[in-house]
Length: 74
Image (cartoon, rainbow, N blue to C red; front, side, top):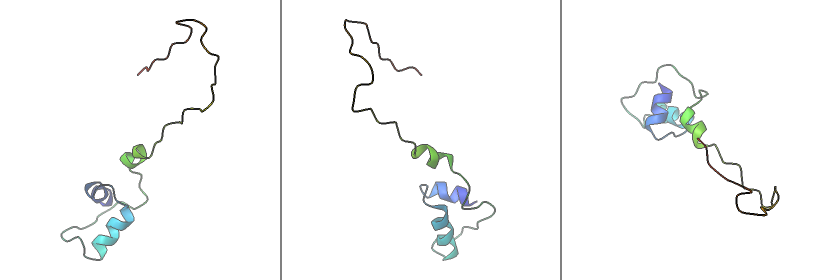
């Protein structure tokens, strides 16, 4: 399918992958089913960005040890 070709070519644009097959630049591949509009979860995950750290303080300063605790929880 077009999505399989998209993934095997390193997640290039599905439209470009389809055009390469149509122009004969990729031989031995027959595209069946699928469309260029299908969503690729790997590409979606790769485009996710983290929220930037604010440049100004959003909470009060700690007055003593242990007032603020920062931890990563999974």
